[in-house]
Image 1 (cartoon, helix red, strand yellow):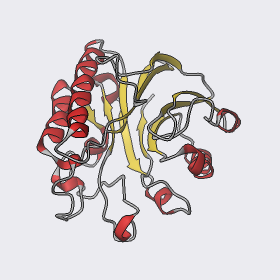
Image 2 (tube, helix red, strand yellow):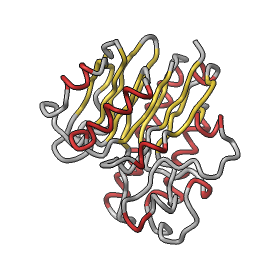
Image 3 (cartoon, helix red, strand yellow):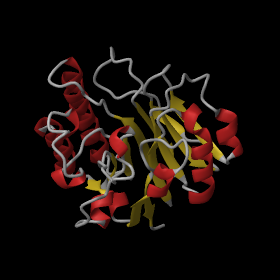
Image 4 (cartoon, one colour):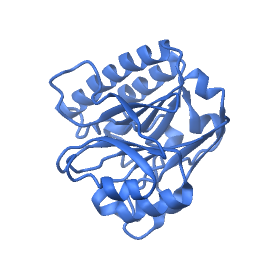
Length: 258
């Protein structure tokens, strides 16, 4: 089974890119983030014609997450991250697919920091940590996939001082990510590539960062123990980032033994 996560940065604008990648990469499950569309605007027909069932939570102009399954209809188990009923941002969806619990998440960016956006980022991460602990305790096969908006380690960002004050690299954000790992979750990409310094998944449109390979690792797939034991391969489809009209993120994927 092949599971992928892809921040499309507007599904309307990137639909041709997404469909081309689905056709060539043939992932079985795909977690999408930053749809930037309402539920009514989601391209259901095009995704269905590509062979995928889909569930999604949209939001006009911002946020939005989805889960696609090749030849299957995902069964929704959650449409929001528990812990704050007043939070109306579309950042989390969870579904059961072929015996696996799949979460697609789009964590808050948190900039500028310090300030209310960074405070919201940390509160959201606390809620994710609590829910992840509950999911891990079930001992089910679970994948938490998406754009975490956290650079876990200094090696996960190109050499620069321009991000020094950015929310993505702050100690509090990194600590939140490492607390997830301490629960027992496996960072799939790092499991396969423990020593690779440049596992970038995001390249900003600004300052020629894609041609310079000035990237960051923001997109992660965290696996519970039953899935971690089946992990056999992982990668980043970097070439997708270089296409015309591309998202500023590249798809990240894992392959599991049956």
